[in-house]
Image 1 (cartoon, rainbow, N blue to C red):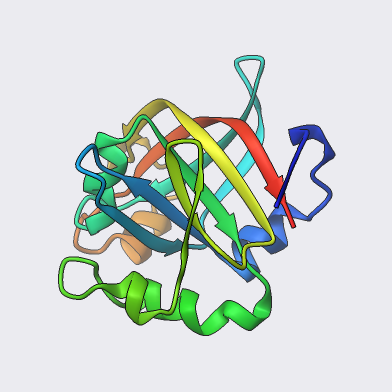
Image 2 (cartoon, rainbow, N blue to C red):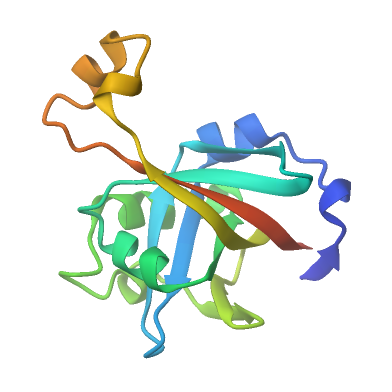
Length: 166
């Protein structure tokens, strides 16, 4: 993996996030790591910073890790890793060692973790967090269909501080 300028990323973010998916990976102070598959999020510029935003439901085990960590990674993989991403999306690290069972091998970027085989890794620093609220939706069909039990996501807005590319 080679470090690149964030502005030199050429991959299509709609495909990377929405179709290819990503792993959100965070580490607690005790060194434990958890990851989850995500297909919601985005990148852009906000507050004069290169940012990304991701969504995590509070019942997800990874939520505990992203809450504790000041920084975490978003990593993107080739299609050959689809089974591992599917496994990580369907299983909780609370119940099993899903990283091991998915066949993922840890790699490190400073004090954060991602997994070997990634084609792109973004190291991010949390800037802002807020919970989505029913009363803030303009299109009320979204909470009715996406959140019928009221389990609204938290949105994290993060500064992208480093990018690695294969």
